[in-house]
Length: 139
Image (tube, rainbow, N blue to C red):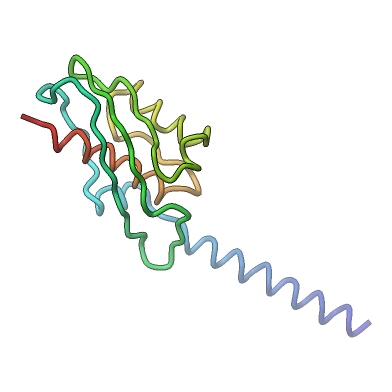
């Protein structure tokens, strides 16, 4: 009986510790977007074309990120986002969650879309790469 009680206490402590660690790793999305300098970009002065850019993001202290480096190709026509392709890492290009993120940018014509829950850092890296691609092309 004592062994069962000890195991129960250890299990409860383990779950509490994991919960505490996971809650401490949550990222304030708005603050993080501001910290990395994510801003909407007017495409009015961006010439039509396809532009590539990459971005390496530094996660906040204590936060893990599966993908800190991303590369995108952004197609602009008539002052609008037409298409955003995820080039690197290859795993993102077939990830429906991330293709939905880029689709939201194209649909809304802005970078200030909701980041993907539990993938905030990678979401911000994608959005910053898009920002970089079009900002470098402004007249």
